[in-house]
Image (cartoon, rainbow, N blue to C red):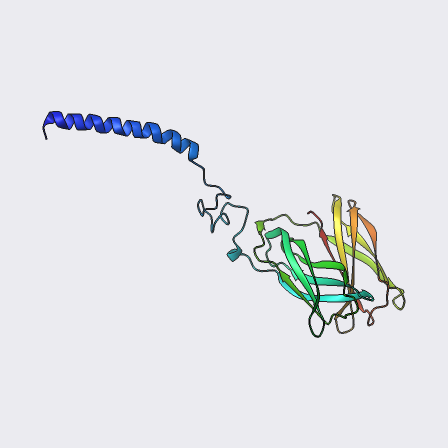
Length: 251
């Protein structure tokens, strides 16, 4: 190849590259999407697709599953039951704003009814999921089961709930219409709002025999409010201990 031909080839190559850049750069600028936590790709410092690393959403492989310590259903009146699921979240810095679940009530032969619902999971919290007014007709449930749905969206959350305490718990009218009263105390300097409280009653064998729920709109700074739980029928056995579990309703 002569020097003249090489020079022409060099010039043509330069023109081609210039035109390629001139066309490709605008296309790149229009179509390029910076890596994000919503691009359905594993990039950045992510531990999986759009999870882990700098993303708020956590990868399921890094999450310990919530522990269902027990689940029970309690007769309220004929054909009407409440169900309670006692759950522990071992993840101290992660929770879920929406956690779908199903509760199954079964008799000796088959499933009576199922109740679907959603809850939220607070970081590092032991809490109760309470379902009320489950109708079973003439059939009596002998077994209660519970399942969380797959694919719960876990997110980082290091915010801690304020510490509330309970005082002056008193159970009355246990032989007719049991009534439990207590004070819920806020020792902090800020008001605490939208509180759900579940009461669980236990017999001498430490078996849960009844449960009820109430909500408290607000407890002011360094103050307390009275809460009341009632049942329309006597308990199935004598209650010797009560446990109150609270969490803040933020969803």
